[in-house]
Image (cartoon, rainbow, N blue to C red):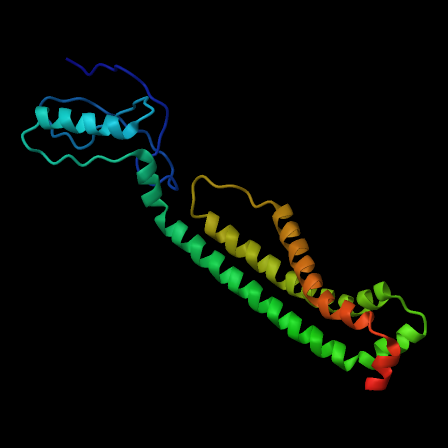
Amino acid sequence: MGNRIIGVIPDFNAYSPSDKSYPIAIHLSATERINYIFLKVKSDNPQLVMEHIALVWEKLTDNALFNASFLDENLQAWYEGEIVMTTVFSTASAIAIFLSCLGLFAISLMVIELRTKEIGIRKVMGASVKSIVGMISIHFVKLVLLSLLIAVPLAWYIMQMWIENYEYRISIDPLIFLGVGAMVIAVALFTVSFHTIKAAIVNPVKSLRTE
């Protein structure tokens, strides 16, 4: 007697979700060893369902080990490496941004001290605070743009190589890099503007007398 098909289910990943899903046949046999049992349940209390299944398992088997897990737990385990990597990269990025802001803060202070006399002369000649802030900030913006021109293509290439390892993946949206670039420029301007505005509003007479 041939096998009888009793149902068809949608494709699913039996292993890592990053791999391609291949056709799989699930069959019942009274003589072969059972390796896996898949259960689909609808319940607001999945833990209670798991406990009930464990009780039924003990009744039907002869002290066989009950080793069950939820699908979301399996997905969590499969992606544990990616989760750790994401945490490490996020922490490293936060530290790098913090150190970069400290560097910009110190460099902007040094630049302002070197150009104190120039700022005072420009103020006497009628330059506004806005124009002085823009004049000094533009130099730092140029450096940030140069760093972005180097970092963005490199980051895109590394991310592209990383997601190539996954069968199901997203496409990298260029708007992400535009948003990150705008954020980096905003952080740089905010960091530099602290000293720049402070120096620009100082009485020019005081700045020239200091020199």
